[in-house]
Length: 390
Image (cartoon, rainbow, N blue to C red; front, side):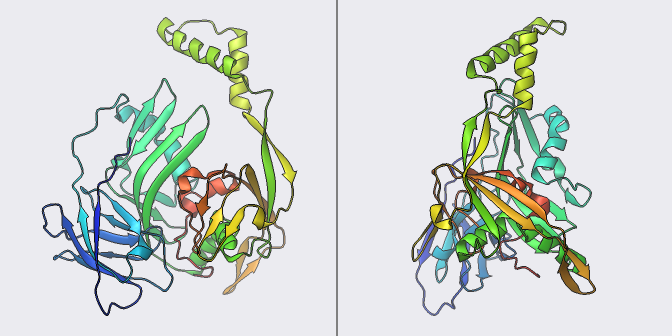
């Protein structure tokens, strides 16, 4: 279970501070300065490190927002809205982490690491594991709960991820990774900071293709009120129960049989009704999706006021995009003539998400995605300060 992070952020007004600068001093709870603390805007290339006397200065471009992160190994990670820290002299107090492992029912084991490292990498990094790698992969810890068929992954150290295709090295602070094999749901959260490692025409081409039609692209279109202009098509979708999927009673029968089988040993006969339930559970989805209305206006799922752009919808949204991949023609990026149709599903389910101009949202772990948006893993992740052509 993720611990609640104790943090203290004390603001003191000062005079004559240039706009878009965040600066201050970082201390521990004993009042001693801390050097080497990573200070960054989550998901961007904007970063600095605290000096020997604990001081830091972080320079931002006009209008930069997002989460300000203070991170150092052996200390609790602290986050705060960046906008609240501009033009303030910060006194930041970081607390030491508890080095004693929590007593848990399901331990983190080497066996779980070996059995599920491939699954984790595919769902966290993506499919191109030759060019996208975690340099310190052995710092990952795995726990698998056989009874509930769930996987938990954590890392006490910051993950160093090399993405050769997009020309970035990413320092990723993995706050949690969980997978439920029954519901087929995967969720992970963390903070990240990017460092550009190369910027060749091929790398810029890869970045542009990763951005075009992505969820980052779509959320920026929402903020700019250019969803239709950017050729995204949004449909209203509802869930319809799938009659072929096992009922709750059948799922309980399957679970009870699996638990009883573990006590019988290796040799036992699986009844045909159990085989049928297991087969339908593996091959079918609990719900089918039905399109209720096509090409709905963004006013159906977006609320706008002077200060906020909010995404909220009681059912589901289907987001379609006709994507033309870019190719290099000399030094120019040109679109191919044959498009690929991308189709994704968003499950706001009544939750309210604030959309920022850089393409970020509040509480991203609560917005469930399906389809092509789920391919936006680390291998296709761009910094929030990326602009097409960079």
